[in-house]
Amino acid sequence: MDYTPLVIAIQEGDEKAANRLISEARPILIRMLKVRMNASQEDAEDAVQMMFLYVIRAIQEDRIENPSGLLSYMIITCRHNYLKRVNGFRPDLAGDMAEEPVVEATQLSRLIDEEKQQLYERCIRSLKKKHREFFEYWLSHPDDTAAQVAEVFGISEGNAWTRKHRIIKMLKECVQKKQ
Image (tube, rainbow, N blue to C red; front, side, top):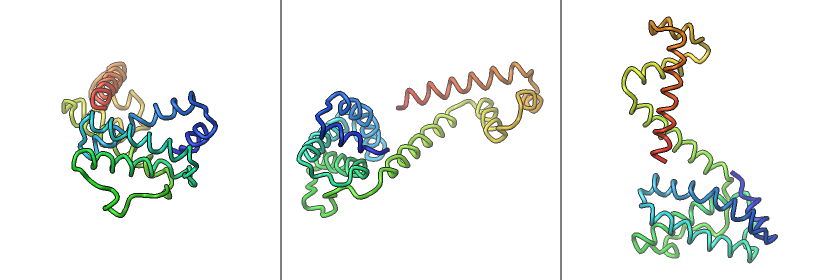
């Protein structure tokens, strides 16, 4: 995820675009703190809010020279804000606080993909055994037709489609609950 458009929006005073981009990034960063740092909702929200206040000021003062690495910078700043909030952590003594974003934004994309993968896996494991086996078979054999799946499980073709879509619906609901 490249946040160059956020830098441009803030520099150009486009509040609508900046607010939209911040609104999109905010829940992702909060979720990252909750999953990776075991932060409470309130602590995560506060850490992200403080990060945005700092980042916006840095952009306005033209201290961001590498907008494509802004995401990495935001993650590091969120973590430091969270640690400071809960432990009295002092980033000035830590020595590894990023002065300028240098890592490409793909790092957060990979982090988010990992978190989504873990969430999907937890939801699949939460299925009843027969639903999990059915779904895992379908994932392992994506080129099989509904008729082939039906034959393997000894059910009708229509029943195979119905089961598949019901399981997908269960997984969707599980993911939405756990996000």
